[in-house]
Length: 232
Image (cartoon, rainbow, N blue to C red):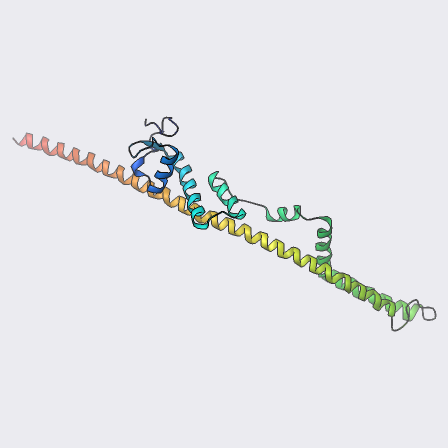
């Protein structure tokens, strides 16, 4: 078994990577941390994957300058090889105060058929009571000034509540957009990392195939030599 130049531990057979097989940028990053690492020394595949992630992080930092807060979550997920998942609805709801929750519920109710039916039923009952049942001593005779006052107050209160709920919806949309951005960015970086792994596997496989072909050539050569000896 080969010995890892980084951890000084034995590497499982088939997972040893020679320095000269690593891309120059990743090799330089490893050599920066471990000056003793050369093109003739070995590193394990898991250690190489770690430095691949670190290399991707450094590339993004160089390209964008200082990382934004939203990108740091993605970088941490790549470094730790973790899945970037969040329950957006629970995250949004957990940050709401009592007033915001109440505004959302009132806005939802105010835009439903239940509210429309209840509201028109209330108006019809109010008019009916004042016209038919309380003809002589109605508390709000025609033209229903008190009812108009109640409706005006309701409209004045309902408008800012709906605006508050719309502002909350904009915040929800922004959080969802940020979440989508983080998922897309991580997916792009993971695809690059996967491409690196596939390249390594192809190179490793080609080397194995060449080795097999060389062994087959040796067998053929031995057979040819044996046949020549029999002929003589």
